[in-house]
Image (cartoon, rainbow, N blue to C red; front, side):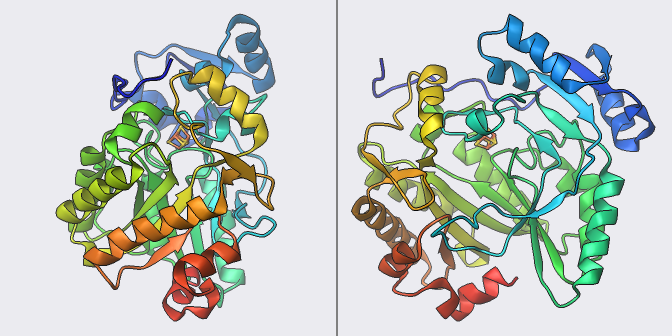
Length: 375
Ligand code: SF4
């Protein structure tokens, strides 16, 4: 059962899938050719229907979601890539964010990851390689609405950079977003896979953001991910290269002694990164749909996610009780503000009431945050 120490799991910096599944006809795409050339040793298998592959995996494996991470399927995405962030849920404040889902599942294995439940019957790690279709769609939408500002993220159903050494989406996305007048790209990550970013000459319209947690939380709850110091060193290298950077303290997990742990996190952050150059820090507390809890307990028996009480919010997700969330946000916000009064701090997936309790304002009444949301 759980105790206070845990051995960190190996970091997946040199991840390679055990098998590469190729949808019929996929080799005509240049990104598919590139992925194949980067994985010369990995066995390949063609397929027509991904559900057949998933069924095979399901019948032979106990942890189907975990098995999905060990495989990689290259596919063509047939729908519309761009959609509004699902943060627009009942009672939650929206931060004007769009997502494109270029891949699904992730090489890391965070205990709290909602994908364990969300991907349900389709846990195979998938990378869509028809990036040309995505760029065509974005171009059309951005041109159609020249007065609207688009803030686009790729990290909703995956980590934006973890696979970038194998599936180099940034080689396509960065030059495209460099040219846009009404859009920025946000790459959200826990990884240190920044080589393609450092090789690229133009940081215009690109924001790279790292999810951070105290190292003790990383060790227990964020399996396979680079440690705090590696994430911050990657952030520093990107900042030095001219990229705008941000941080997400999300999910904040209220382990015993969380005050000290998050104080140390803020200290390490501010000692490594010139905090005045950080675009923003977002705060979000651990939240989950009820169906996720059993999966987490089965897949991560050592977790400390459920040591506190949680209650359902207006959007149906369970969260820490409101006074505790308020206290945590106020405390951590205080640590950050004591290092930089001007730092922009916003709350992620939170109610208007919590915004008001913590910041004394609603987001749209604050000029700086309003500008941020309208970036
Ligand atoms: S890095 Fe993000 S997508 Fe990957 S396992 Fe962790 S929470 Fe899930």
